[in-house]
Length: 423
Ligand code: ADP
View 1 (cartoon, rainbow, N blue to C red):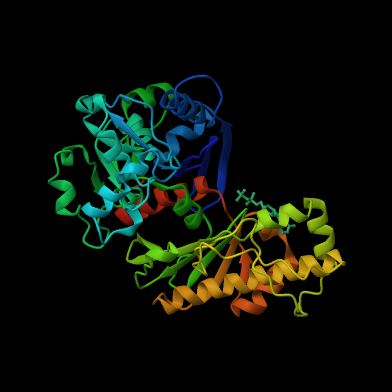
View 2 (view 1 turned 45 degrees about the horizontal axis):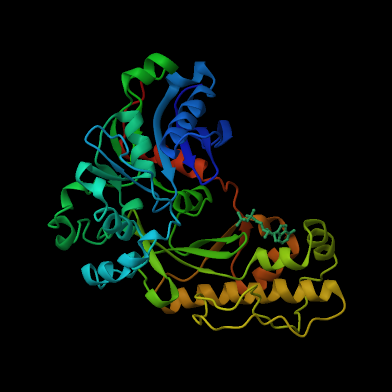
């Protein structure tokens, strides 16, 4: 087999690899759950090596490019050798809540960083800690893991760097960041998927990689999952029907609305915009077992409109498509017939999904043309038919949903873009 591309996905509980060929066919994939008592960076490093070790050895020389994704806003503070000087701060670590005001003062027009969990808030928190004087590099999880493969420090991509306050329109740090006293710690930002360097010789010796294998700049887990979906053009979207309802729409226009949590990532010459609602599969799971969800859904006539109109939530408050922290869950009237109740829930969520895409378009996003579906709800054909009625565009399951697959595609696209001659 000639010409393979490797994507590595580091999540919260484990990591996956996905090896594809130039046609997008999967040659090999594997998953490893993090386990052991080691500190997190050591655990990530051991898992990275274990993922590489699981690739059939005779395929390693055929791998032309490798890319990694990590969880957005999981960050590390490293010394000049790239050794973490303290524990990483994970994507949801709230300890920088005292820095939110300072972040707002630094970048008042960049709402995506106005949160305790943003990378910038975490950096401001770290700069108050006594060990900060030893810091030489502030890196994201994906940057650090890529460093282990190519040996270059201080490089990140503009997907990971959005929550650090990097200006993705002008492709530069705002001067208030670059000229700050910790500005020298900020990584240099390159395009996701672009070549950063060749794989280190020690990995070639150990796993028989080709010395020409490129290590590419990475991305975040959710963008990688979007890339996996098959959506490529403006107007194409991915709805994730997991515990929550997450919409992502590829748009020619950049769209932002801070109050609703709507913001845009740069994706080449396009923008990946979207929003997330607290409605979704967690509400379904509260009322029905997985077996009931399948069995009762089969009894729904998806072509018939349910008269029930809910705002399905487990606790009060939502941001998108309706931004109201006091919004009460609307789950009544509840009919005695569980099929009618489930029909009402699925139909109400379909209405909210359509309302969400409508909201993005009102804000200026490219009109919706096609929706791919990911997450647990994607396997429900009755729901798909109901959603199609409201969305009025073709709805189909994503052929691929794994972030590792999307990251492998990123590595492949890099090689196609750079037109590097295969060896
Ligand atoms: P996450 O990764 O966000 O936890 P998943 O993508 O694994 O979620 O999806 C799990 C959700 O899918 C559950 O909340 C469950 O309610 C929903 N789900 C599972 N089976 C079905 C089904 N047949 N129809 C609709 N929703 C389903």
